[in-house]
Image (cartoon, rainbow, N blue to C red; front, side):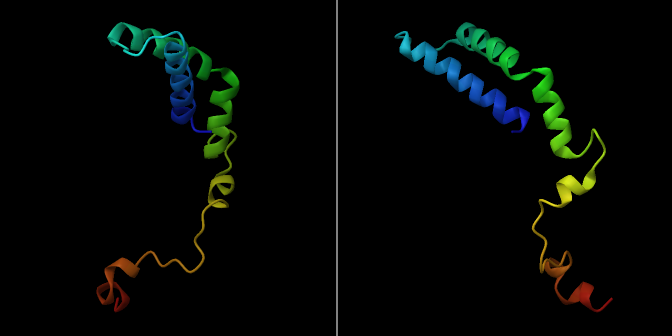
Length: 87
C-alpha cells in the first residue's frame, strides 16, 4: 500500500478513537497529536522498504512496475490525431 494511503488509514483510525471517546470536534492541537501518532505507526522500516520495492526502485526492478501496467492496444500518439500519424 502506498505510504500516503497507509498514513491516511492510520489517521482515520486516530479520528475514530476520538469519536469513540465522545470527542466530535478536532481542533488543530488534536489533529497534530493524532497525526504524530499515525505517522509513527505508519512510517515503519518494513513499510518504507515495501514502498520502495513496489516502485521498483530498491532493489532496481522496473519490470515489477511495468508488468502491472495495462498497455495492450495503447498508442501513445493517438491523442495527436493525424498530425503525428503523418510523420
